[in-house]
Amino acid sequence: MNVSKALGKTLVASPERQHEADVDWAIVQRVQGGDVAAFDQLIIKYRERVYAVVYNMTSNREDTADLVQDAFIKAFQSINRFSGQSSFFTWLYRIAVNSALTHLRKNKLRTFFSLERVDENDRPSAEVVAALTDDANGADRETFVKELQEKLNEAMQKLSIKHRTVVSLFEIDGLSHQEIAEIMSCSVGTVRSRLHYAKQLLQSELQPYLRNER
Amino acid sequence: MNADRTDRKVTIEDLLRIKRAERPPADFWAKFERDLRAKQLAAIVAKRPWWHAIPRVLTSVARLRLPLGATAVLALTFVAMRHQAPQLADPVQDISPVQPSLASIPVHTNDDHTVMPIQSVEVTPAVAQVDRKSVV
Image (cartoon, rainbow over all chains, first blue to last red; front, side):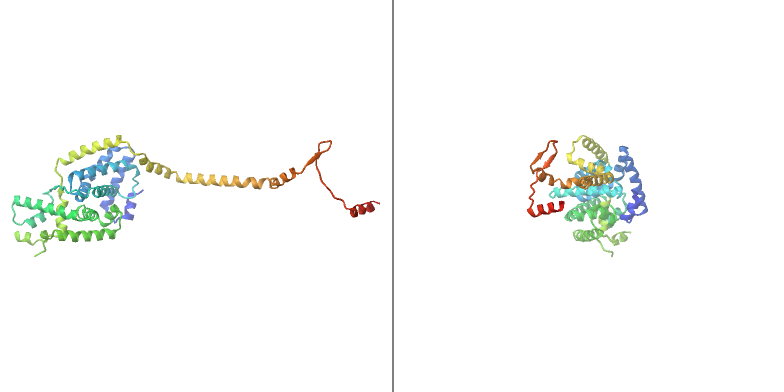
């Protein structure tokens, strides 16, 4: 099936997304034709994004690594059943998100969270940190960032699994409402309402760190 | 400059932006790849439950749905026609139920072994007189 047409039906797809989907489909067809080594290209392309989404659902590095590896293995084992009706990344994300949801439902009492390092080269986040830390020196800034990360993790964990998933996919991975609806098998309206509710909850939890313009 | 920083608005979206910038350590991906390879090899040799094959079987059957369906329709039509055909082709068979009643009538044979049913005929005198008169 023509992936571009499929995307046109289901997503408000940008040209970049369509191109990305077409490239992925070509690789998938090679894998389905027997060139299994080509699957590595898809792993390298998507592993960091899938990791980020799952990490923000679990807040635990070891669990995230296991879940992401399992997602890639499931995708590889099912690759012959992928017919291109959705884009490959939507299909892969759906596998990873469902695996994470199943894991979280089974392990509700897990409380160990890990903190990842914030990339100093990421300019938008550096600006936010700078705005929050004002005149703090390097060591104080680092301590502040760690504290902020812990608060963010705690606030995310207070959300329900579904609300946390929507926030991870929208705010952190930057997907559109339509893409999230496809991944989570719900309507766009449901995505919007979950996002709205989640942000309200996060705002109340993180009030000390928010700043209005003076 | 500091005044600019302290005046900057910080929203919940900005805070979540920090989470977007979170990265695992540099050596994480090397270990990730090793573990993934080990799991891939384990998945190859792992015995899968028998019901894992069902989706594959259904997919291959689904590909043949048109010819299978056509064959099923033809087979049903053929069986239905065979069932109806014997009743229409041989009308004698319609009276076969009569045969048992004929067979129950006792018979005798004459010298040339022709089977003749025994019939009991009651001849009334009036009829017998009419017959003699007509003959004369």
